[in-house]
Length: 169
Image 1 (cartoon, rainbow, N blue to C red):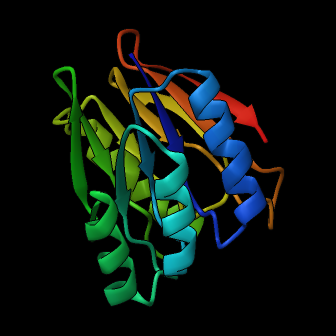
Image 2 (cartoon, helix red, strand yellow):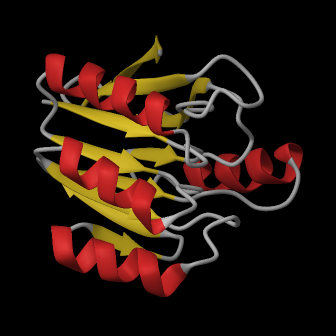
């Protein structure tokens, strides 16, 4: 089972279209967005283009929470503050956006992985793609979906092997 993982789309509609095309072509069973969608119209576009389960954690730039919540309810999107746990095929995936600077975010993520309470820690915020393992727990940042700070990327996560592959948009 594959799932799509993305973060920091920052209202980049063209990048969202490309990401959802990759997810569709890969036959993902779900999509997780790790925050900073920004506007309700962006969540609407994402929800209309994702034909599978969609779960979203809010990021530090997601300020119009009421509008995002209304769109999420209209499209049956799981949406909430960090942290959120998504379960697929018995795998527990911890979704967070991030905290402060990149070093602090990774320090928190690493500590969560050390606990071994989840099969994977998925995070965004830093706009830096990363695939790492700590004590057998996957740490995944799918990178910057918007392309504003680096090449736009998303990730495909194989839940059987717990291996992630980064995809450039």
